[in-house]
Image (cartoon, rainbow over all chains, first blue to last red; front, side, top):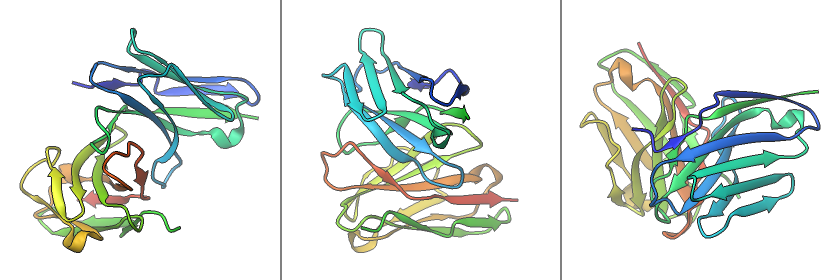
Length: 112
Length: 114
């Protein structure tokens, strides 16, 4: 049973607009959440993370929001750029240093 | 600083053959992880080393998979004998200290078993 779910396989956005990628989780023991970006033929690259004690973390154009009561997090990219086109994975961890549990990924396409 | 490296980048073998994948973590990273992604599905955890010791191997699919990390530096993942369902991309990741959540991934090895 999937503990981390990304229900949208793909998302298309125009350059300059906001991209919102969603992620849901089922395990209430998760205390840290991460977003990774992956280009074809490359490994996942760490993008941004959030601890369960926070509800928002911002880094430049990227903001992650966490709603613990809904077991939901989202990644906002503003403004979106063509170079943001990639697969975005949501991941969660229950303890530092242990395995990351990944969602299936969302393919973001940003058109110019 | 060099990132995580993996070799080979791609391997094509026949069912029943043996393949060994190698991972060199970022220098100084005690934690080393193996993951696998099969056919567009989620990236799944296989096992975790702390230095040369296996900390968690709960994700290893069966005893055809053997991972080692001699001397706590590079790691190898051997599949023997390979089956068709072993095809996928094998990622290695590393992190600096036991209490670090962020893991840094290599480019992966694409394994195709025919």
